[in-house]
Amino acid sequence: MTPLGHLALALIIGRTLKYNTTALRLCLLATFLPDIIDKPLFAIGVSITGHTIGHSVLTFSVISILLISISRLRFLIPILPGYGSHIIADLIVAYPKFLTNYFWPILPQRPTPDDPVIQYWIDYATSITGIIEFIPVIIALWIIIVDRYTPLADTKTEPSDTNS
Ligand SMILES: [Zn+2]
Image 1 (cartoon, helix red, strand yellow):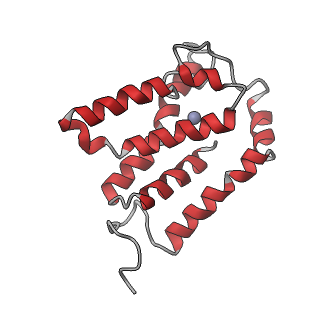
Image 2 (image 1 turned 120 degrees about the vertical axis):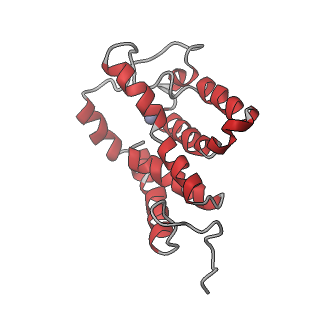
């Protein structure tokens, strides 16, 4: 999934959970976390794919347990839906060929993409999953434009119908 798709999913989740501006910003920023962790590791040759530590459901589980169990860190809990939705979305898009990467370090890594990167994204954009990605993007645009729910302004905690 592209960064735009990840952001769109996180915005939908933030709207659904009625996050305030701060929580929504954390949720949105967290959608970049798996790639911020994994892409540099891949770029410098530490891993053979851009989906390992940051995209692992095990890493996500450890972070979730830490944020939920340590009271001082609970204000960071809104990163979990953003982070988790990134992993789930990538997992669905990558399934089944790259499924093992999401269980690092238990299962072996598989390199992705197999083709040159540009060809990979052209293939993705014209695939059914690439086309399906437009659905959350359109929903997110609707939320931003019609509902005026964005991370930029002071978002209401209950964005529905308070102006009517
Ligand atoms: Zn990713």
